[in-house]
Length: 417
Image 1 (cartoon, rainbow, N blue to C red):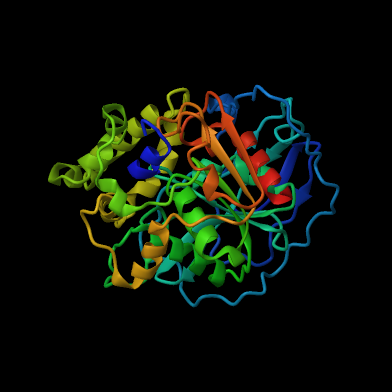
Image 2: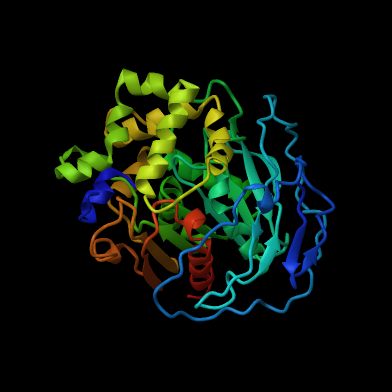
């Protein structure tokens, strides 16, 4: 979210094996895996890595039984290879991306009652200006869900939610945004631009590169903004939308107006990044990680994450373009850095706060300091298609990782609208 969307809302501001651990299904790995990376198995929970916890919602909701479909026929994707080899940078010490979701009762049905061990496959694809690193799981012929992370997070925000969607027949694609993780610019001459229209173009380029005509888009933070822009400007590419935080499209000109003190305080890092000290901190690995860890703690005050969970995500912050991308994103939002002229037409359209016509579920996290008081009332008029809204109490900014069952439920509901 940006501070002005915040203000409008009235706010203070591996290989792919899918196996059920208890009574689930087993899917064979795809025969064709583009530049897949194999990882050692993660340590068992008994070794000190706790099973993920979930907040129980305080309201009734429909139950979604697991569909009775046969094991999907994994096979060659049918898409040509990009011609790009493995990226020429040292491999980050990623731990094996396999996670166990323990069976448990959930008042809204079976979303969290699947005992799953679901590694995902990490791949690279040339897409537009980028060589995009992304995780994928689920049947290759299933309806596509693209999950988009925010800042300061990475693809592991969907580590628990992605396999829950995959076992329901969805093909789940989780890309690293530009400047994060395994995603790299294909040319050193490309401006390290992080204005909102540029990041949205990356998403369309990814869909094109993977041969995906339409996808359900779901995200939070930077990811929610990116998904909303594509839904607004390219609705023919969007099956449905899940937007955590509501309507987050930025109007840069509206950013000039000051907010109340509490709202400005919540955006402290945005101002810090406009300074030389902030730039130097982002370029220092230790200070960068300390800063991002502090943001995790303050925007998700009820989330008791383990240090291993943070370290797993923080490897994505070691991307050499990360400091420049983060700095440009926040400086551009405040009108302190220029965008590229080729995106001017898109930015003019986005400044009008275009309506979104595709089926949409919006989620507000009750403990996120960027969540609008009064729920969705301030942005409800921006969604003119089929629409649902929920506020998830007790959950912070990183909702897909803090409450993956709620995130999965939102995706299922959006696909049924």
